[in-house]
Amino acid sequence: MTSGGLPGVVQEYLAHLTVERGLSVNTLGAYRRDLGRYVTYLGARGRTAPSEITEADVEDFVIALRTGSDGGAPLSASSAARAVVAVRGWHRFCALEGMVGSDPASTVRPPAQPRRLPKAISTDEVERLLEAAGVGDGPAPLRDRAMLELVYSTGARISETVGLDVDDVDLTRGRAAVRLLGKGGKERVVPVGSYAVDAVEAYLVRARPALASAGRGTPALFLNTRGARLSRQSAWAVLRAAAERAGLAGAAHISPHTLRHSFATHLLAGGADVRVVQELLGHASVTTTQLYTLVTPDTLREVYAAAHPRALH
Image (cartoon, rainbow, N blue to C red; front, side, top):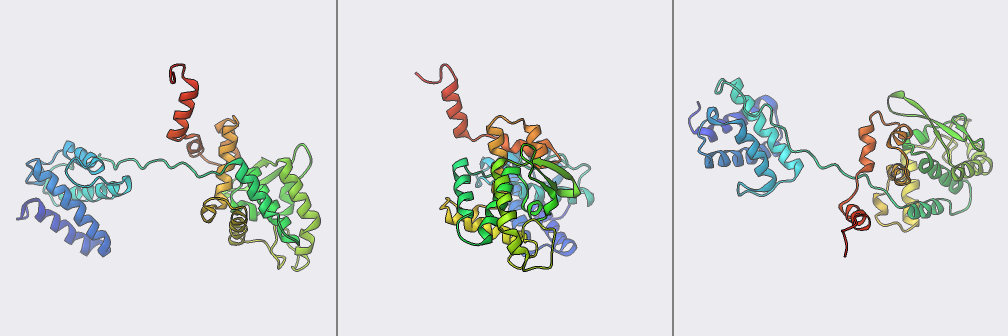
């Protein structure tokens, strides 16, 4: 083994990364810190050579990274995951260099990243947003209201929405629907609610012809002032402006995806089956849709307090 014990082997590994992998100075610095903490931790356990390190040592270090039980600062899940990558890479290096017969870190996994709740706005905030989108004169407000009503009514991605042609929308009362082209070219047909039908009809009759007159003729449903298909960037700007006009909290962070999240959250809150919502959203896996069924600790406490017979005196 390299002279200098475990710190010496770490130096060898870092030199290898510098030459073979060309990692950035920042990444190398992070690896150096993470492995330095690991070596200190191993030293406290009496380990002096790679061959003495067990799988339990590695697993306990992962716990120490999150809890700070080794005397170091507790790390977030993402920072701890980076440290685990460094540790696993170092052990793999030791095995490839013949310093150990087996790799004790090969089956150790980084700590799971917390599942983030998708951001949603309330039904009241959605109404304020949609009202604000339609304020003003000329064809643009009618277009903006129709577009956002359609996004919230169908849960469509903004790329799917601006990609719509006039023929993709059936506004027949009682069976109104829109044909959306999702990821991987997968097509789905989604019902359209009556408010969105009214808004799209108003746009088609009173606004789209005026916008189309500036262009060369396009089948696109939503047009810009030059008569061409509205871009994703312009659609984002429309939403941002409406959110600010409506005075919504965190307006700068509201995106078209916020309406998609709100569509899913409000459907599930209303009792819709998660697999139906999966179909409407065009998710390939129900696991993705199930993110919307996660509840916050506050909601858990409220439901518990209201529902459990011995929760309150």
